[in-house]
Image (cartoon, rainbow, N blue to C red; front, side):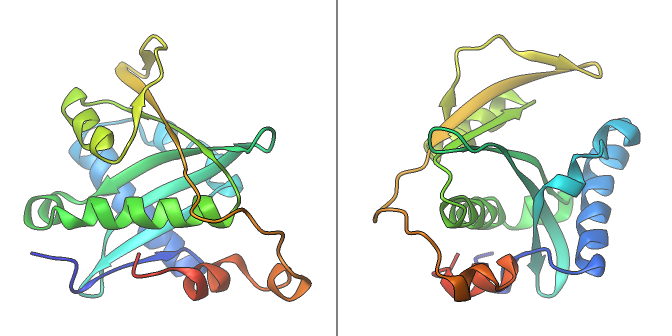
Length: 182
């Protein structure tokens, strides 16, 4: 399978948010037996969310949470989930979501990405996209051990201050208008 039929959008409606929640619940709670209270931890209300569709069906999601505005800003990429059937049939979904997360991060003028990954095999995928180990000790939460990673976002052009016209538009609208085949 390829990128054809795959779209990734920034969540802008309650229906899209529910679709993102459904994907996360299917992957983390049902498939991986994680505690629902931990998975839906309250940080969803202070974050942006991506939702990936394959042929119109929601199959992936990622939460993007800006945690610091100082020194170029820091964002945490978290709760990346792709439903099992889609993971098996379309490896391009991971790349497409990461490309959209990178676009959003640049749009927000944030330079530093942090995150965690549970499966050491998945760390190989993150490294392919430029992520590296932070050197920090693994993080233990809810009976799971997570490896921290980081990524420095390289900008092709200097960050620009948004115009008033851009600032009053909804972020999902600007996200759609500014991305290049993400």
